[in-house]
Image 1 (cartoon, rainbow over the protein chains, first blue to last red):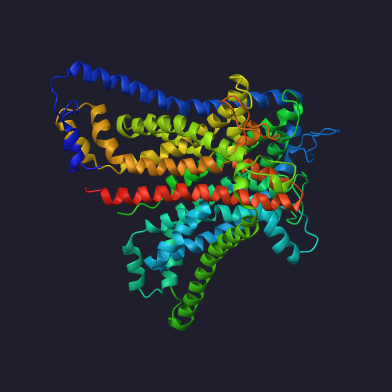
Image 2: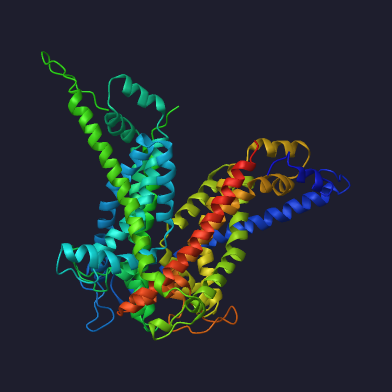
Length: 319
Length: 297
């Protein structure tokens, strides 16, 4: 931990390169090179993973598109690959995904940003030290638990009393719990961005007679906007890729609807459904999950890259 | 902040009363938003506890799943989760820490490092179910490990690898460069510097980060849906090539059943999972605090 720790003295005599110059420089340098090679091999794994993901998705998707024309997949409005007549239009799955993600983000973004403003601008340290662990716990809860909560609590105790006729499985409950799930993400990233805004800007605004609220909304938030936007985009990406909560609560009926009280199916939910069933692995039905996975991968990748670009391009740098 | 000039002749009115009132309203909005998050979490935990605690018992922890809810238990899932955790520790931690060391201590500043880091960042953003597809194609099929414990463990290991790397990098970055310079000045090689000075200083931070990654691994279920043969697992895995199940998957199966009773034991299983995760996170926090106190630079 530190150079001053007593353990350094105890073990010092055995430390090569410090107390034992007898060990040849040649051997030490050889060790150094071997270790470097080993470390590089480790780096290779993450590169291989990337290539692995891309290769698997491209290969299987290509096989899928040998049987299903690309336009049918991308623009078709019916998704019935598991029964006749088979139709492979991905739009119902995409709309289900966007509906759930849209509800989630519509809930998490305003709440998350207000929580972030509160934590960054208003909250005394004592409150921060209570609220932040809560956010960490919320962020650490496994997504399957949120699915359980949506199905056994949010739908029967909140949605159905409010809107009678809500399906048991519905996009609304899934969207609400996914919103809870990404709330800490939005709040944390936005708060970090606001924390990076220099104090002098706030002081200047106060000196000109601005109230606390005006300082927060007209000075700090605009100055931190790139970070807040990046957090928002990441939240969308996370909500789109979320699987367990959605597989449990959103249902498994791929329909083209924007009604949150209805049962829908998301891309991730479909992949889970097929994986759980007994569809033969070499069949076209099974290949659909890779085509859907590819669509999902491209969507989240575009969003993740966009969030990085927003940060890089629009960041205000203060001295 | 936009500055608008007032038209000539119009006197500026500070309207302080209204502006301060807006400020007070906003503070209440802040309280509301923060309370919403906290209350939602508390409601979730209370709901799980109220439903799950009555079914918690020693039998629940030591029984296999059954067709009858009141005879079901989480033994197979608990043991499977434990084994998957071990595989993650053995596979993802060394590789992840090695990658972090190379990126922080060895990599020349430049495009290569930037590309690798961007790549790792993007890997961390790939939806977990996509890793399941990778695992299915590579471990289950290409390496013909079948739907086995080792295939599942490796898939989760690959999934948390970017998180391990990013957390370990942060811990390494927190070690002041003066320590490295001092070591080099005394004639140490690069590896000696890392091995005897940087790594010991960064160990608590690395441990904290890796435990957090492990808790992510333990709660993850989506990729295992593609890997595990979800069927009824009423036995313990004998070896790495045996089939397996894990806690989140067991919860998923029970929640997906229509019978109310299975939802209740799902709540019990959630309590087991949350206790496991809380223990791990508490350990991480203790290590983090100890690291902070032990820091003397």
